[in-house]
Length: 367
Image (tube, helix red, strand yellow):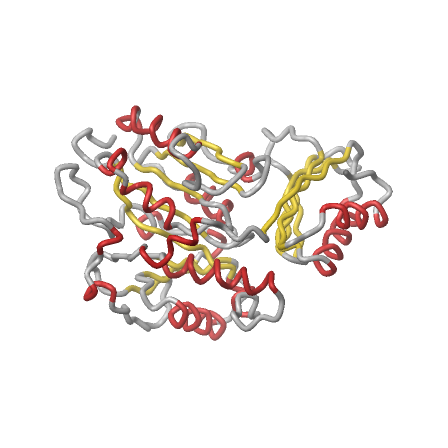
């Protein structure tokens, strides 16, 4: 366990909607047996879907679910700070804190919160990871030259997540060629030259030694003085260059990665165009029909993410995960006993129109 004289390391895991953060984290938690972890999961929506999907071992992992907004956005009494206070009181019972932010969040808000006097004496940022949906990156889904408002806003969020990342994780890469991976690395390095590490997540898995305990932001000793992130000297803000061949990971130098937060305070006010809503149904679902309908909805409306749980006509419980028109279903974890519910996240998306589209295409009632 972490001795009380040491600061507890904190790793922030961010990444745009549907990048695979939850799956990656679930695998990471289950393969980490040398330390006890506390995990905070944040979702942009009124109910939690990602928390129940985390099939983690029962011992050694403490899960805290925070949904309904963006972490660290809000006043003194927000849920994130309350969770940190609770963890601080029991910090001797775990070794490391992992924070999974919403897919629409930029990590700066959490970074600033960790620097507040109330928390800086007990917690220390270990590293910030950004999980990248590599096929979407290569397809130009985050191109700043994209024509519609939704893609332009997505590109802004994605670039901000990259800018404040120490580690960029290329995810969903199993079907990609070496040339694809080199192109993806070049794209990430071009957009965010300060990224320190580039890691490949084959099978949505990462080496814990390349993820936890990186200590990229200073000493863990509580007595050591930590300069505020917002006060980074200019010479420490120079781009880090490294274009070594992809061998599973590539690295820059090993000096502490320092960020300046001063230019991104406005990201603490998330784009109000992003909206989410929950639809439910009391009837068993025909999975192929539901998948086709969700695909069509994503093609017609500015829906970028759909996730939830449904009961199939065969009596089984299934998780539904969609990123744009790419829809997947799989058996839900045994602990899931949620109603038929789907969370839709989009940009200026109409709940009424999406509901009408489901009603028109499916015999089951959704609303």
